[in-house]
Length: 215
Image (cartoon, rainbow, N blue to C red):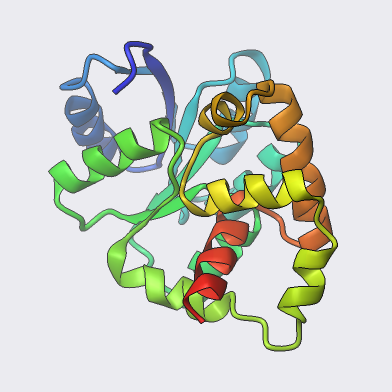
């Protein structure tokens, strides 16, 4: 783990779960909860003034649900990493969330130690999906109507280099360091390559690329 402390916002309408998760996260000196709330609308207000590094977002909440909250956050330009932490293992929920810009999807019935480990991986810039959902996502993101070679041909050599590293789970900071460019330049390239591939999130692009490499 980095010596830097990652700030976290918890959004979940179950107080008991929030309490348990908070106790779990407090075991790690590198993680710090700066806010928690039970409603999506409250979360939108919190990130306006103090955007955390990571947002743990429940899917099924009263009022504004997690998916709509996620979409609104991304529409507002929130760049924090957002992880869905939910009881729903519905295929459609997983796919909709990843396509809406989630950086990962974890199930609440995972072992606490596994949840903590996945959260630490996200802080390092990796994507995280509960293991039993990974194949669901990979299958859903296969798009036989797309010409993979034609899509890749639209990318510049630099965009392709960055896409390959995204597929390996590298964060913008690590990619920037490896290629000798700034974080901001990496962000611009990522934005352009996602637009060319007609994808909404780097996780979708990563899964698509990993799946292509297997075929």
